[in-house]
Length: 199
Image (cartoon, rainbow, N blue to C red):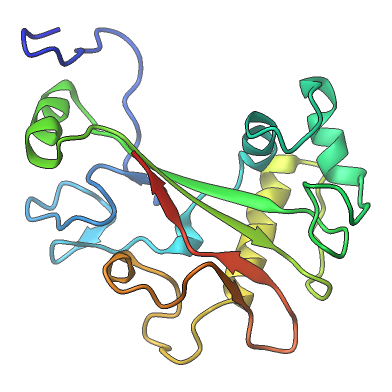
């Protein structure tokens, strides 16, 4: 540590904040320094659609939703379409979980974040279900399939009453456009949960 009980990493890799789901500052906070590549005019431009669903299988496994044996997680999520299974929606179609991560991008920024935000890591999570109508992408590659399914769900559940900001964004943490689960308003039903943050 540096004497303030904050670990300083000597080896390893810091996050790449150029990825839209990896935040150099908390998603909910202003960025007056412009350090976060995902910010503009001091405000994060990331939206719920930018979160990454490529680790859906791993997150469902860690949460205990998939069977206990990790060796069968991917195949189970890909192919077991029984409606009663907890990794499927009511129509037997696969759930997805998308995540974002705030973590400082350097040892110096860890110290600053601890002072400014009193926290150095936040995980953002949201879940989605394709419902009965959305076409399923190929799930052979679970990361690619999870991301494609997430895109389809967030597109279907876009906020049609505000076309300039169709997706949940940084401002919506203060005044949520929906609570719980949003159902798509078009002719193809899909379901999208409001994001949560884990500190």
